[in-house]
Amino acid sequence: MNLDAMGAHIDRLIADLRVTQFYVADDLHVHWIDDREEAMAITDADPVEIHLPRIRSVLDYATCLHELGHVSGRYQGSKSSKTRERWAWRYAREHALVWTAEMEEDARASMWRPYAAGRSGPPSLPNVSGVCQPSALFVRVPCRGVQ
Ligand SMILES: [Zn+2]
Image 1 (tube, rainbow, N blue to C red):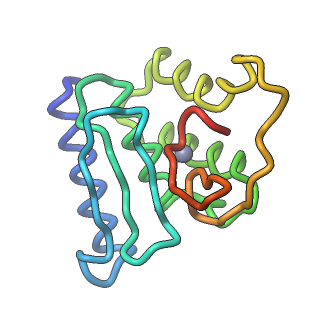
Image 2: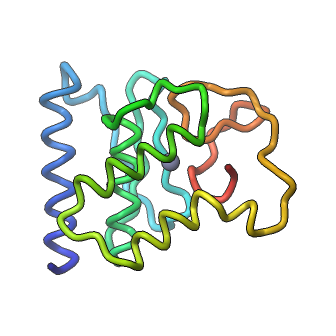
């Protein structure tokens, strides 16, 4: 499986989403970005916005699947960002055409990185359902890094 095939798969999932989950194509805005660390899904907005990394590695592919998981995965209305993250990753695993050990390691690292970095616990932030990772100022910041 090469990167082009992974990109084609993401394109297909997005096309399916537009048909199954949105009334008009314009209700879902897809932004292609260069830095995987800045990927995000803003699902409480109209239009819904997803920022997906251009696929240059299997980790970019996994991140695209993860963000799509925030749009159409289960339990994305949960008040717990951890629950939303976990189930977005589950969507990624279930929909991936390939799921490598490297992808799994990255998924786990994105869930646990702040703890590994020695922080005492998650910051107490307002919990906005549907936003990947709200900050205290409601500025949308990426899924990854802060948990
Ligand atoms: Zn996420």
